[in-house]
Image 1 (cartoon, rainbow, N blue to C red):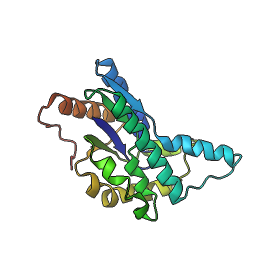
Image 2 (spheres, rainbow, N blue to C red):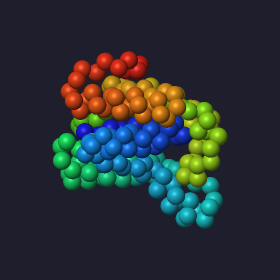
Image 3 (cartoon, one colour):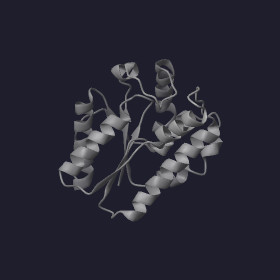
Length: 194
C-alpha cells in the first residue's frame, strides 16, 4: 500500500509524512519512506543557476513526477505486499503546476492503478513564515495552488482524508486512518472524508 500526500508547497506534507512513517516504524510495521523528488530537482536547478532564481517549466514538472513515480515503482517491486510505503508527495501533485495537462496523460493511469491512501494537507499559515530553500513559490502562489486541489486532484483520486491542525494532530489522524486500512476495519474516524 502507498500512503501519499496531496497539498500545496509548505502545507506540512513532509512533516506529517515523516511523523507517520516514524509512528508506523515504532509500532512495528514494515514500512519505507520516499521523500518528495521536487526538493532534489529544485536543489539541482538552484546549483545549475548558481543560486539565481529557479523557475520550473511543464517539462520540469513532468520530470519530477516521473522520478517520483520511478522511485515508488522501485519500492513496490522491492518490498513485500505488506509493506506500507509512505511518500510525502504524490506524483499527481505535478498536475497543480502544469499549464498543459496533456503532458501528464501517460503517467496518470499508472499512478491511479495502485492501492493508495491519499491525505490532503490543508495549508498551514506558520509554515509560510519559515525559510525553505528548495521551494520556489510564495505564500500567495501556494494559496492559489491549494485552491486548485479540489478542482484538479479530488475528481481524479476520489476519496481523500483531510488533515488540519498542528503536525501532531495531523499525524495522529493519518496514523489512525492507516491502521484502519491495514487491519481491514471499517473506517469510522470523522475527519471530513470525501
